[in-house]
Image (cartoon, rainbow, N blue to C red):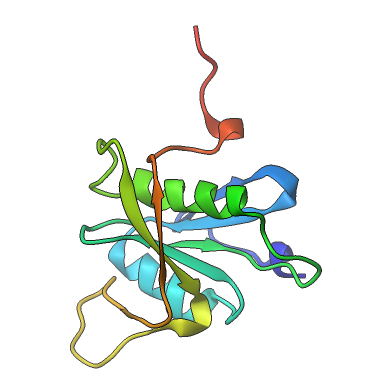
Length: 135
């Protein structure tokens, strides 16, 4: 099952979302390349904030169901949180399947080509389970 894939915690952050969904976040440009191009499965959902540097995020696919919009928005919010758009009130985040992400010769680490993208507008943030308790 996809959620059982092992990701090195020194290179990737792992967030558990509601309903058992798992999001994996790259920590560096090189880690983003590995996550997006080598460790992903074609049916995983891929996220990156539009127009500014930041982490690539994978929402691991589940063969038994499609993620609800709320889960897609939580993964998109993670992409915005782990980017230079963190302080923005709202961020535009690219969403596609990992199989639609590629790299051509000459692109810098962390830079990729994306096909069949959708844009989600979200507020940058961590999933509710990951937020620190409020005082």
